View 1 (cartoon, helix red, strand yellow):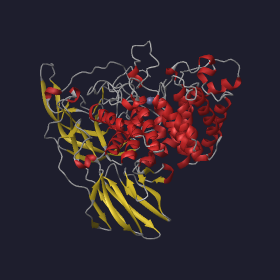
View 2 (cartoon, rainbow, N blue to C red):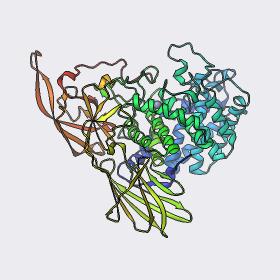
View 3 (cartoon, rainbow, N blue to C red):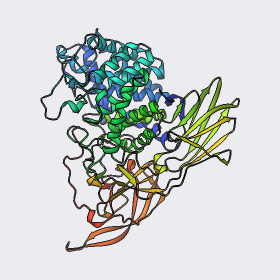
View 4 (cartoon, rainbow, N blue to C red):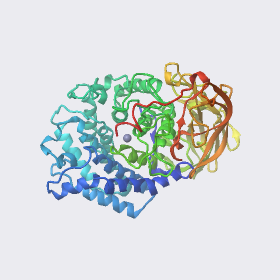
Length: 639
Ligand SMILES: [Zn+2]
């Protein structure tokens, strides 16, 4: 049923001016920040050392803190693949020794219970034991794939065996309070070829919907952790956004291996519920501040948007899997939106500050931080950026899919022939993509070039967002300078050809500035527009608009043009246009409209120049201007 497989990032050498500097920055800055916070500032590594010392010392921090160590290790493993660094590898080995020393004789590994009351282990579903195990497994698989070293993999296998015996083989009434282990077990299955782990992943999925556990709090209800219905009966998104993303990613992974069509059927419905009714224009998800959860349909407030960085990372994971299962490009449209906007905003340009929640409007109080008490987001964005090569190419026996446009070199095998593909582009700032083919002998294969939904008049799949100005300018494909007629399949331009050395494909995707309007059901965006160019969503920030951001009015007739701009070390394409300002008179008794020039910058790049106001959705008329600012929680949510 799988149409193609995504090419692993380790086979994609990224060379462009957009992602490569970010991957380099993760290697040099972000990982250093994660390591410093994990072992020096906070007690995360210390907890493992305490277990090994066996001196009855107490656990420090929060019960899920082990997971941040594992996720940082996973990011280190990806980075080591593209940026070999013996000091970093030594640090990873040092951590792995400490983790291995904290494993119990029966395979159990969780510093919270081992330093606390071990007799209470596996009794409280909210305590994230399987979530931590999942991140351990992901780190172990990543580190083994990069270095060939098995130590952490053996630790993960022993823990997974312990869980399998304790849970599945014992018919335990249990499910994962925070999903994650499901997708991790599929990775463990693939690296070990032991179907015990695939069965355990499937077992975890099958346990939901029984409501084994009820909680005394008023916000942990069965739907909070997707336990209201069996996974195969779920059709609507509910509850904690990150948990939901990891659950459906795991279900898609199991379905891809087992061919289980029931998972696929329901996931398409859930996906539509997310994208058609519950997704921000940034590709972010999750409204609630207290429970980090989905709200009712269309409840998408801008100042109070939660849009946890991890939830956007989860959208990237899930949409990749959905595309792999169906071969349809609409999933990459969503993946691209979440990646370039909702997720990337989680990381500062300097590489060492992080957003947890990503609102779409701010009065200037919202800033990235060095770290968080609950520190899931920093290492999550680090592992995503360092492995972003995972989302570019797909391959089947008969074709190559180009899903994202990122300057890179990759090699594909057809029979005994190696096909070297070199992609050159200034994407996301420019829609011209050049592909050079190099191969030893003439070879037939299909090339599938994704036609982005936004290049086809679709702001996002469904009716939630629409372009208010769209002039159809078709994408064009030239091979060796000659324009080709192409067919379209599942949202990809298909080029069937016998390729020869030196063939050059020029793919041109027009990138006008598009204004977006939200469906009437989204009351927060009523009478407002947002702006997008290519995959990049824009916002207005105080740093570029000294006369204020909350008083800007963008009349329907206003047009915006592009200009080069430098934001710290980041060269971007900014937008500039004539708009209006609503300025109160000196006595405050009236409002005058003044013409002004407004600059909009990529949303992901905001909040890098000090405290600033920001808005994504701008009013078209004075009636819709909103004076003042209200927020139900200060500077983020419950982290
Ligand atoms: Zn997070």
